Length: 474
Image 1 (cartoon, rainbow, N blue to C red):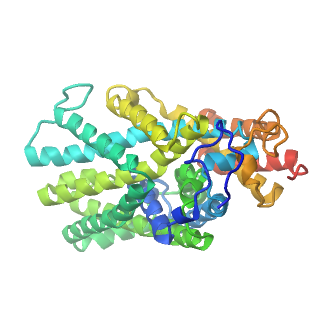
Image 2 (cartoon, rainbow, N blue to C red; image 1 turned 120 degrees about the vertical axis):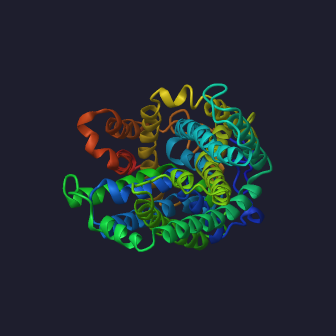
Image 3 (cartoon, rainbow, N blue to C red; image 1 turned 180 degrees about the vertical axis):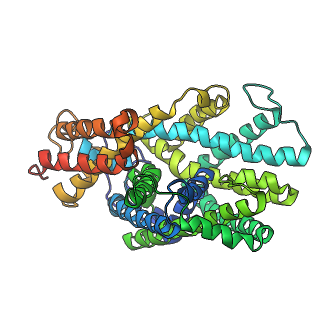
C-alpha cells in the first residue's frame, strides 16, 4: 500500500485512500458474484428474453452476439479495473489523473446522480417482490392507499429501504457476504422456475425453442445490423458498472483473480442466464399460449403459493443485489469525493438511501409518469467519453504510471492539478464527444445509432483526448 503523506482534506478521507493490503480480501468468487447480481436483475432477465424475440434474428446469431458482447465488456472492465487493483483506489480518485484533482468531481457527480435515480427505482421494484409475498401470505388488498401504493406496498417499501440501510451501514464486508449469498441463491430459484415451466410445457417446449431459434420474421435492417444492435445493447446495459468497476476491484487480491472473476462471472453469467431466459420464455408460450418476458407474470400465472414465496425471495434478493453493485457503492464513493471532509462512505450511502427512498415513494404517482428516462439516459451518455478519456490517459499517455501522492494533493505544481485543478484538454474532449453521445438520445436522425452511442462516445472521447494530450506525458 502507498501511504498518503500529503493529505489535502479537500481530497482525502480514509474511504478514498488506497485500500490497505489486509483489506484486499476479494478473490475471483467475489467478482463472480458482483457480476451474477448485476446480470440477474428482473430487467436483465426481460432484456435477455427480448433479445431473442425483438430482432427477428436466428437464435444462434443472437447467442453469438451476446457472447461477443460479454467478452468485449470483460475487456473493458479489465482495463478499468486494473489500475484500482494495482493502486487500491476507487473510480473517482482514478478519474483525477485524467480529469484533474478537482475536475474529477464532474464525472463523479454525474455517475452519482444516475446511480441515485436507479437506486430509488430498484428499491421500489424490490419492494414489489416483498409486496407480492405479503399479499400472498395475508390476503392483503392491493388497492392504492397513498401515492398509488397499497398499505402492504408501503410496508414492503419501508422494509426494503431499512434492510438496505442496515446492509451498507455495516460496511463493505457485509455487502460482500450478501452478494456471495445472493448470486448462487437467485440461480437456484431461476433453475427451479425453469424446471417448473419445462415440466408443464412438456414436449411443446423444444418446438417453441426451435421456433425462436429459427428467427421470427426478417431482421430489421438486415441480419448484420441486428447482430450489432444486440451487441451494442448488451454493452450499453453494463456501461454503468464498466466505468466504476474500480470501486470493486480495489478490494481484489491480484489482477489474475480479477480477470478470472470477470471471465467466469461476466461471460459465464451472461451465457447461463441468457440460456435460462430462452428456455423459460419458450416454455411460457407452450404453457400459457403467449410470450411472457417478465418472471413475475409467469409466477402469477402458475398460481402456486410455494413458488410465489420462493420467487418473491429471489426477486427481492436479485434486485437488492444489483442495487448494491450498480447503484449504491458508486454514489457512496462519488459523494465522498465531492466533500471528503464532510462525507465518508457511510455519509454518501445515507444521502443515496434518503434520496433514493424519496424517489421510490414517488415512483408510482410521479416519477414513472414524468418521462425522466431521457434525462437519465443523457447523463449516462455523458459518462461514455469519460471512460475513453480515463483509459487512454492511463494506458497510452501515462503508460500505466501514477503518482498516488499527487492524486490527493492540490499543490499548483502537482502532476494532476493542471489548470486550477481541471484538465482543460480532457474537458474539451469530453464536451465534444458528449455532444455526439447525447445526440443519440435526443436527435431522431441518430436514433439508429442509439445502441452504439456508448461505444462510439467512449472511442471518440479517448481519441480526442489522445490527439490533444498525447504529447503531454507525465
